[in-house]
Length: 374
Length: 251
Ligand SMILES: Nc1ncnc2c1ncn2[C@@H]1O[C@H](COP(=O)(O)OP(=O)(O)OP(=O)(O)O)[C@@H](O)[C@H]1O
Ligand SMILES: [Mg+2]
Image (cartoon, rainbow over all chains, first blue to last red):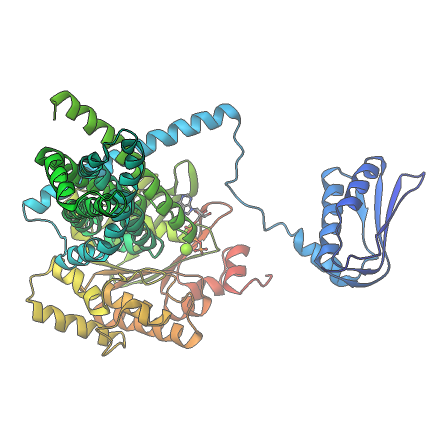
């Protein structure tokens, strides 16, 4: 640890209301908290503050900070303060710190409680407005694509597809295998109590195909691909690339959003299928190796539980999640601020928003399916 | 000979929301001028450029380019003006997922009907013009900051624009590269007759290239001076301009 200075400045208030602060010796790494508290207790009684140099040897910014605090206090409370006897370089630093050309011209406003409610409401309306206009632009862009007037580049689509397809297979396979394993495990403990462990097969099949496969893929892809969309597009904002696109008269949505949405829409259903299969294999591993169920019987029960209806509902989830992830990622990127910091914020938002909306949409689909009896 | 007016700015207020950076701005940029927008940090130079290029709308007033008020023009008219203007951003703003040649080919593919082979040749030519011969297949991340700027300029020149805008072209460049870029700007201006609008506070390049300018002031939020910077230095209209042009000397 750094050594604390022994030379606390001397603080005395005489009967003429003269507060004198005397500095001497080495004043480095000076923890000024106590000293400044004492100063603020004494100072209100003073009419004049005098800062005296009684042989300052070594000093560093901690001393300058103390001087700065004292002089600012004096200025704010209209107490006269003299520091002519301080060494010249110290005085220069103080003059620099008080130079009047470094006041912020705007910003940093404090809002009262009511004002901040009003501001939050206005911000919310603005956000809703910008989300709606983004959705509108995207729809228009899809329309342009199908009428052959879009400026989407095939290369961009291919590289987006490569990123969210082949490169995602390994992680999706691993995670869904494990989820299948866990589902079977948890189910088995319950089902074993009344000797129905063979129904683990049905449980895993229905669970994975209908919903779990799609949700797992959705969460993985939101974290993996959605966030990378937000980061890539956000970085383009920081580099003024988005400005360049706009001033070149090219639609950002055509150019950046469309290939990414199409890639995810194509990849998600396929990844969901993969997740279904891997989950069932994971379940089978538990069934066959832990519960010692005969392999043929397990397969038989699995196939009996498998229905095209459930499978298609799962795939449909995957399709919707693809749209949601791509939209959330691209929207966060396009509305990213102009510094490096905001790229991080945009990335976080894209993942959180995508997951929230996926859950909401799952709820909606579930209710609709229930009503329709699917 | 009377020059034709390329950009006509009338009663312009620049700002964001309720925060006004500049008001009552009036100036003209003539065809073939090298026009400088100068002023201290944070006085709204880049914002002014954003208004001129239609990235943000003016809070009030008009920006008329080639007789069209860009804030109120139809999408097609704005598009036509954009095809005729090039912009060099402060960081170059090259698309990082494309090679230099692809960056330059992009506007050509969008807005011209040249054959792919011709487009490739044109891209090579533009790169050669800015001194980047043979860098066609490099990615932006593989070249230096100064080279990025030159590549950005090559892209800005892709469609043979009437106006090229520059945002702080010399920021982050060493004196020699900065000088070379100035020479390049003059070269383009003289050989192609391109109108040039430059935002900068680099004195050396202001005196080297400008033949007209405006000086923006953050305190009064107005245009404090206008004209050829060399004339302004000889007969400074006020203290602030003199200080700026002499790096802070007192009158
Ligand atoms: N998007 C924005 N929203 C609100 N205020 C902004 C925005 N962009 C810039 N500003 C503010 O506008 C002011 C001027 O910014 P601008 O970038 O135009 O300055 P500048 O003259 O280009 O400065 P510099 O020479 O440092 O580049 C700054 O005070 C900045 O805080
Ligand atoms: Mg700027």
